[in-house]
Image (cartoon, rainbow, N blue to C red):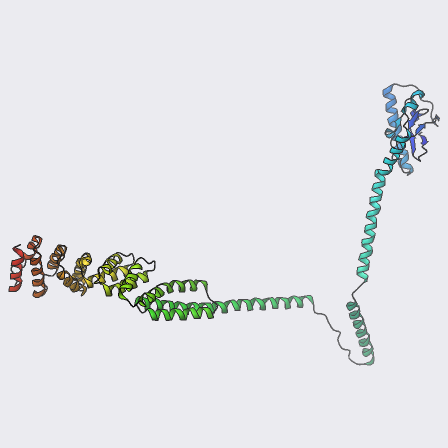
Length: 440
């Protein structure tokens, strides 16, 4: 049976019988407590036992006391006996260990500032319960408070139903109540609108793509015609086609790819138009020579065709000789033809090639190359004339006589073997010219 001890601070302790007659200190306020020496009811005084048996009995008593409190339904005391600070048994040391008033006041202040763990837990439960009650109350308010529009609609439906019931009793046919659209109808309508929007979008894209294709085809056609006009040296016509393409692009909103092609096509046309606008021949030739290394092939082609008009000038021939080695075959061919037409020392490397090509194809440029070779007096032309004799043995007699006489005039012994092959020619003039050339 426990001994109940009450402190002046309203704290209550239940102590085992072994604390009877001893002095303890309250854990809350520090007050000195004297445990009364009350006998244990219903039990004989405990006899002295060994320490280990006494400890086992004490533990058993504690368990029995807990079981009795649990069965009785009373609230167990939260304080444990281990929280107590028992005073020494000797009375002379009690006053020494007793707390001072200042320490008691500080302990009371700390106790008030630090509430008990159970009290904090109870406060948290009460706060949580209060919040749950408030939430339920708000939910009920929201459910009960319907919007004013819904209330009016409800009253209208009730009134319509009441009128329908009254008309039904009087024999008149009641009008069917208004029905709200079902969700499936709303979904179908939404799906239809979505499909319509997608169809309109796709149709717009197709229409725009069709317009873009038409614009691209029209502008590309103008660009092709402008390039053909530029190749034919019809620069003004090419300029007009490019301006029309630019206007069409601006009217239709433009296209990055087509605009880039248009800018590239304008470069050679504008360069050649500026070149042809120069009236002075010397200034025009000098400007054309400056454009020999232009990055656009059409510009170099136009320069080659323009320099062909001034191929008699030494500067123009040097520029044409450089263009004859151009990477673009159109530019190189135009420069070679211009040199062959003009003749001169710079045309020597191309005269022999033209004669050989004409022997295989019958092109008239071979005759032009032979004429220009006969006009030259440089010793370098001898191999060209000798090769012409070998390739044109069946040529008319006047042509063969002209070649043999030119070789005789040049006086190169390298021409003698080729001239001897015509010693038995049927034409007397050819035999005489061959004999003269073979005597060298």
